[in-house]
Amino acid sequence: IAQPLNLQAFIDRIDLIDEQDNPSPFKVLLVDDSDTAAKWTASVLSGAGMVVKHIDNPLTVMPYLANFKPDILLLDVYMPECTGDEIAKVIRQTPQFDSIPIVFLSTETHRGRQLMARSMGGDDFLVKNMEPDELIAAVTITAERYRRIRRWMTRDSLTGLLNHTHVIEALSREVTRAHKESRPLSYAMVDIDFFKRINDQYGHSVGDRVIKSLSRLLKQSMPNPDAVGRYGGEEFALIWSDHTLIRAAQRTDELRVLFQDLAQSNADGHFNASFSAGVAQLKDGMTAQQLIDAADQALYQAKAAGRNQIGL
Ligand code: GH3
Ligand code: MG
Ligand code: MG
Ligand code: MG
Image 1 (tube, rainbow, N blue to C red):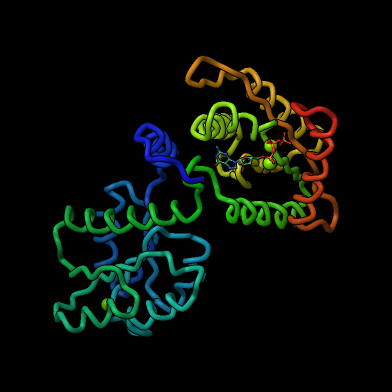
Image 2 (spheres, rainbow, N blue to C red):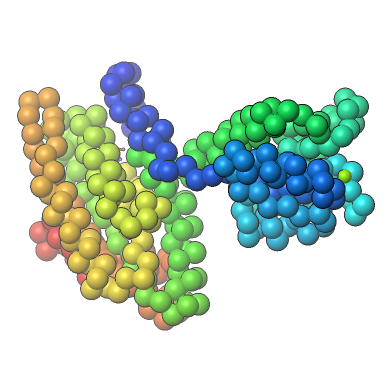
């Protein structure tokens, strides 16, 4: 929604995004045929708090990218099985690994050879035997930058919650897991009541603040902050992993009570807002889309029955 430039509204927008929920240590996947070189690199980086996994055969890198999920890949260039740039080229052809930064770490000092390696998809080229501080800084800068980019790709810019695409992806993963492990899974669709009225009465920036206050509440109250997404404008998705329908409904109702009691402020004072939610539990053979549709139906019931309540 377009708004006139307003510095406070702009600052309000960034504070949620910059909030890093406990940044985890960087995971480094180190590919080097030399045990001695790898030991040194690993000890320097783990000394700086990073988690390092070393493999010596570049041909085995793919499963490690998928399972270890490194924040950064440190690649030697000259190895017996194939060169680091050959591996970089293969990795870059795999869309799911395109956002993993690749840093070469080699004895190669020839500029042309370094550039050739980088043209295969490398982000940086470090020459071995550098000072420990320099190595730590170079790895941190690149890993941090990519982590920020990934965050922007998956988050909603107003609230910092998972965006529409990524909350559905998270739900799909949970649906697969729930079917495989025969665990309960519930899903709630939350929608703020009479939100158009809030916008019309107090203006869109007050409306935005209401959305942000609910986002904060949901993020703080859910067991896992990545179980909450902004599904749409004033609609939120809650993934209740391992929750039966009744338990998920109870917990969503607790959130409803917390939200209705939150004082929302406008220019003249305070007002209260509320939400309705529809909750559904995954049944045998159901897809993520069918679960969302079931919750949507339940939400419709809650709205029709008078709002500020949970539909089942
Ligand atoms: P109901 O109780 O039936 O949900 O009524 P409602 O007014 O909330 O109905 P509806 O869901 O149709 O309206 C949602 C409104 O939310 C429409 C849109 O203008 C507004 N909206 C969507 N995204 C944003 C946003 O990011 N900021 C603000 N301020 N308003 C938004
Ligand atoms: Mg080597
Ligand atoms: Mg709506
Ligand atoms: Mg609404």
